[in-house]
Every structure is written in C-alpha cells, then in structure tokens.
Image (cartoon, rainbow, N blue to C red; front, side, top):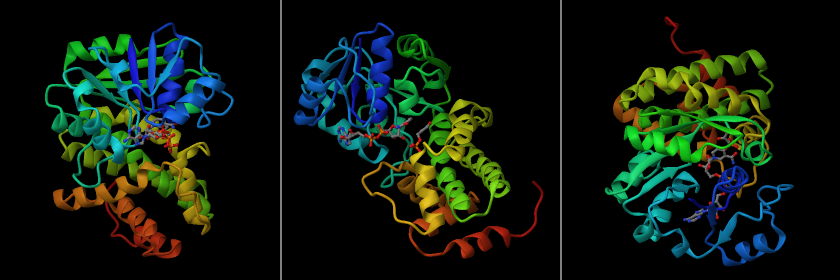
Length: 319
Ligand SMILES: NC(=O)C1=CN([C@@H]2O[C@H](COP(=O)(O)OP(=O)(O)OC[C@H]3O[C@@H](n4cnc5c(N)ncnc54)[C@H](O)[C@@H]3O)[C@@H](O)[C@H]2O)C=CC1
Ligand SMILES: O=C(CO)COP(=O)(O)O
C-alpha cells in the first residue's frame, strides 16, 4: 500500500499512476469538500481530463494512512513543515518520500532535511526528476530519481513506487537530488524571462548551461556528488523545465520577461527557492550570478535590460 498526502497536480498524478499499475493507493487531502467532489466526479480540477481510477481511495481521514507503508508528501516545499507537524503522529517512524522541489526559505533546508529535523525516527526519501503531472497522469512514459540515504530502503521504495509508466532510478545522494530539483526551477525562471524578453534561443542555451554550473557549485558546497547533477534530478529536470511551456516556473519567468502579471495562486516553487538559494550561497561564498539576477527580477529591483547587463558585464573567465 502507498499513501499520498496532498491532492494537488503531482500527488494526484502519482496516485493515479500507481493505482493503474495495480497498487493499493490512498490519496489524502485536507479539504473535505474537495474530497467529496473528487469522489463524486472522479476528477481533480488540478488535472483536467484525467479520470481517477475506481481503485484509488480519496479521503480526508488522516487515520486511514496509519501503518508502516511509505507515504508520499506531495505538498509545496514551503508548506512541507506545516504538513509534517500537523500529522506528526501518523507520519513518524516510517518512510516519508518528499515529492517537492525547493529549499525552505526560513531555514535554507531541503525537503529531506526538513523531514529529518521534524521526525528523526522517520526515513526521509525524495522522488524527483523530469516529469509533468499531466504527463504522468495520462500514462506517458517518465523516468524519475528515487533518493534515499539508506540503501536497503532506497531499493524497497524503488520497487514500491515504480509503475508501468514510471521508471525509477535510485541514488543515495539525497543532497544532490534535492539541490538539482530546487535549482532547476530557479534557472527555468531565468530561461522564461530570457525568452519572454525576446533574447532568443541562444541566450536560453547559455542560461541553461551556466545555470547548470551554478546548480553543481551549490550542490557540491552542500556535500553532494557532482555526478548526481548530471542525472535525471539535475540535468534531466533542467532540460525539461527550461524548455517547456508546460512548466509553471518557465511561464512565470516568461511573464516577467514580457512585463506581464502572473496568477499568484499558481505554485511557482522557484520564486521562494531563489531567495533561499541566494541567502545560502552568499553564506557559503558560492558564486551564483543567475540566481542573483532572478531574485532581483522577482523583487522588481531591476528591469530586463539591467538584468542582462548584470550577466554580460561580468569579468571574462575560463569556462
Ligand atoms: N505539477 C507537476 O508537474 C510537478 C510538481 N512537482 C512538485 O510537487 C510539489 C507540489 O506541486 P503540485 O502538486 O504541482 O502543486 P499544486 O499547487 O497542484 O498542489 C499543491 C497541493 O498541496 C496542498 N497543500 C498545501 N499545503 C498543504 C498542507 N499544509 N497540508 C496538506 N496539503 C497541503 C494544496 O491543497 C494543493 O492541493 C511541488 O514542490 C512541485 O515542484 C514535482 C514534479 C512535477
Ligand atoms: O517539476 C516539474 C517538472 O519536472 C514541474 O515543473 P513546474 O513546477 O515548473 O511546472
């Protein structure tokens, strides 16, 4: 059995995919009315056009997640700690797989570190990599990274969370996997802004590549293995998010580049994470010029022309 906490786009897509793969899945949401609607219509408005399989149990009863089976935590990064605290009794002492991508603004911690801090007896893991919820829910093929520092648990989770359209690779480098997932959103905002401002595809490729260098620098400074960033959780997700109109982070950046507003109700993980990364990288003395520019753009401190100048006027250096 698998439990999923958070019935947003990603939690629901994973639940659908695992249920269609023949697993027993319980999807928990905090909003009783939303749960009633989903049970009535067998649809989730966050995933239009996707029918929830009859075998998928949707509930607002947190007690139905009691047990020692793995729980997927599919809530936004900045809400992860609240969600854990609210249900600590049910979540403690079992595998908890964070499905969020980001760094906590108030602490500079990644998802597995937040879990470890709140519930030291739980086994923190991470599910990350290039995958749009809509693609997963439609049964399209996807490959993801399952990260868990505890080797045997990593293998068990890899088996338990694979599905016909979800191919999971595993790593014990949780820090590398979570840094890649957090940073790709920041760089996707920069790429969206470059395209939105009309700077062209070559500029986007430059931002992606130099953004990858920032991702690696930050990850290594946090204790990750450089190679992890070349995998699905780093390069893979960067490639997807920086080039797809499906990405909310990319579209948010494009709106900045075009001088347009963006719907504040949409989950854009890279916005808070850019601020968290800026603070962490300054403390560690890690040079992250694209992240600095993204923060300045989000905060409205610079316009696109100034932002471009900030990057192009840097001293010339070896690659
Ligand atoms: N949507 C996608 O394609 C993908 C999303 N992700 C990651 O998944 C995470 C969640 O994103 P989405 O599902 O897309 O967001 P979403 O905006 O569709 O849904 C977020 C859900 O979390 C719930 N929630 C918020 N705070 C909560 C709390 N304290 N307790 C319980 N539930 C709470 C909300 O009610 C909402 O249903 C993000 O970190 C995102 O980066 C990862 C891969 C793909
Ligand atoms: O993480 C994702 C794809 O791997 C989803 O990206 P967005 O949050 O930018 O939509």
